View 1 (cartoon, rainbow, N blue to C red):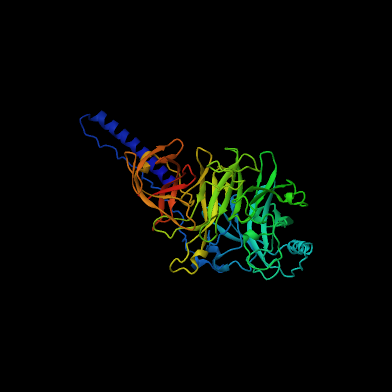
View 2: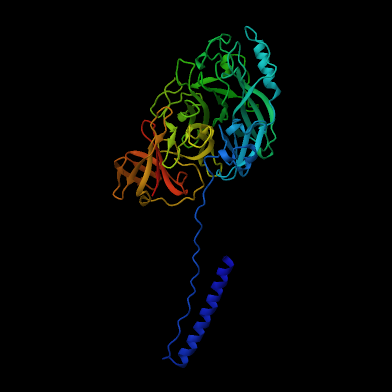
Length: 538
């Protein structure tokens, strides 16, 4: 195209020069003779192609088998952890897939992407269980009182790896849970013991990991017996902290902390040796960490898990993201923050989460825009940053609801979601209403908002999908339809205020549209920490 345009321009210039010479000569010979105007060649208008956007289906059951893994993209994602190495983002996850397609193919499946949109399934990061897990398990069982017999062939669960770069190494903190009963006749629904291990790699592209052994485990604290019969629940947990769901942060002062915990006793912060990536000792219960978040101050039952910790240098806060409630449908994401890694962590309402207050704001919740089944089980996130642009992102799985017609076990469909994070003027994160699709950035003006919108006010209801209502933003800055009031737009800060709620706006991809297309969205928080999401429909 450039070459042809150049030729056209050259011909045009030569033609124009010839015409000028011709008309000049004729004028000198006969000034009264009419001249033929030069032919103007208009260069063709090049219209850029429409943004194609992702087209893969949310219902991936037809390609869920192992033989179709090259087609998965973000299908079969659970408890992701994302980091960047070279030109690729790498995503690692819990052993989980629709129909257990991953079984027999190693542990901690991973995939990679250059753009956070198209993902290539790569295999697994761990081939076999490290020998230290069984050895440590039986060593600890033998030293319990009363002593428990060794387990010759433990049953394992492989959960929630966390990947980060430390110096020139990539560290993977991973969870291995022993599913055998502790003692007596209990079923396997409650883990005998959980371990967090560490492996290191020089380059994620090689998938070459050197295992470094145990970091921490679930340790009895003597407050509850482990040897008894009858029914049990999380309130009867016999150990101090449940050693799964690791995440890690390096403080501005260079201190390293592992954050972990799931479902009971709260979330713990454990100081690590920066060189080894492990605690210096595990001799007393205090060596297993300090509780930094608790859903109930006096109960061992918590219904919170999946912590993710980041430090934002722009706000100078540590942000602790947590998954609340049951996995299948109610799962929702909360966040609190602190100036200190060991707390206290506070909510948007000023409540002390470290001391057991309920955590607000809420960032995600089961939801549904029009034209879609909606998404549930939407939490246990990875929060990561593009090292070049400094943009923040939120990644998690989300499930289709239960009993969707035509899909066997629809709630087992777990699609990976990657969404942009914006930060409001008060330093709290908000999550984009639509999944990230690499939509080109446009100039959004006040006129861009005039039209029909779907808005979801994400009220907290246990296991209930929050549905959208249709509202209209008019040129006279009024809101009508499913809500009434006013709106305004601050183009400098890309902040739309709708009925007093300040929202960050984004160019977006309308995933729910029958023919997907670009749109714009907004995301904000009420003063109480309730998310408000909006998507323009026309």
